[in-house]
Image (cartoon, rainbow, N blue to C red; front, side, top):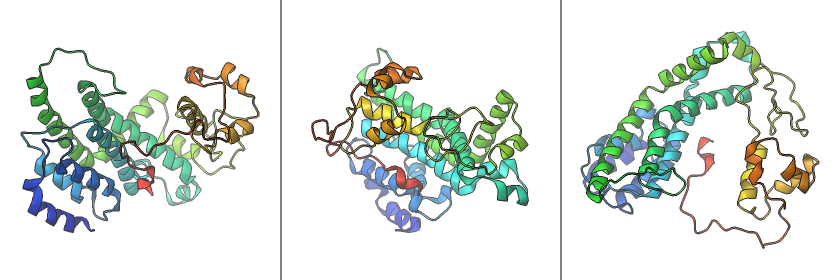
Length: 307
């Protein structure tokens, strides 16, 4: 359904949307509009979720729980990534010529663009969402030890919703300026220049990274040795996280382990970083003994929203 049609319906029923109940219809509508955000073919400021935020920003009675905070965190990160991808703010800021554009490696350019978008989201909205989770003593957040009374807690929720909504709307309108700020700060810290970044992400032959070169992407083989920073190993991170949850049936950890040509014992004893200390000695086997089902988990937004 087009954004215009959704907004027309919201105008009719906005007074009926209940935000004072964490499981109310108002939050259900919030969640559905956030999920459909990337499917609406209008400018960012004209999308239906933004209209709803503008309409409900001054609500006096607001209550929300862990699911709402989780949806807000996902929407915040996805919003910055999608807007940067659609508007190509990095390319506008670097301003490469036509000849240089032809030599740019799209995957490396996208990686740096996403990096800047994540930095911008972390500086503004993500911090507010994390603070909300801490304030509400939600699992997985660092709790804030305070002596707040129940009445003050209830009064604080509408204020948090108000500030969060205004910050989201403001960031949507000013994302290019936020990306530019992050880029300038990186230039100051690393002494990089636009010319250096363009040369670093120019097309090169991909590298076979089965041996785990820390300066190359372990998935696509893109070489980031010129930059030397901001490089992670996504397959290793996935392996570590999957191991912490006792692995899922048919996960790719065994294949990843075999490609690195290491044994189970060396994987746990010869780690390359502190994050590897929690990796169990055992790898998954072809059985259902360690299968963890997600069927009972709360609904989450899949990453394909960027497609």
